[in-house]
Image 1 (tube, rainbow, N blue to C red):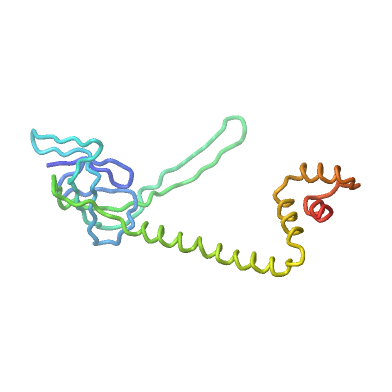
Image 2: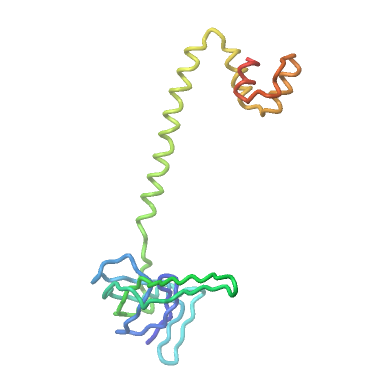
Length: 189
């Protein structure tokens, strides 16, 4: 019995007790891993093809060791320009041994790690909103004498510089062409 399975972004044709070098897996040596993205199963004349994967099929393996592959030389050259760059690269690999191939009845592997991150993010987002609200509450307490002035100031901060310059021109202010946005808001309020 053999299977074509996707492991770490690559497809491998595997059989039981076969050793395979795959891209580095985030598992410790001696741990067992299961790959449920089985694309094809072959058992003699009986071949099952998934669309794109076979439901319930699973390949079990054991991590034997982590290692680095052979050095690959990357040499770049541009003729007549004096440009030569030589780099080397060693791919991080994991050696696994296929222990079993399950044709049906296997459960999908669930990843619990992304869920806590998703739960933690919404809790973190409301906190800045809670911090921003007290600062808004402090401002109206200081400006109770002139609530209309604050409303005008808030409206001015939402306007663009071009709109502020047009407003300054209509009010007859001079020197507005060289003013920055903050200066324009201060002069108009």
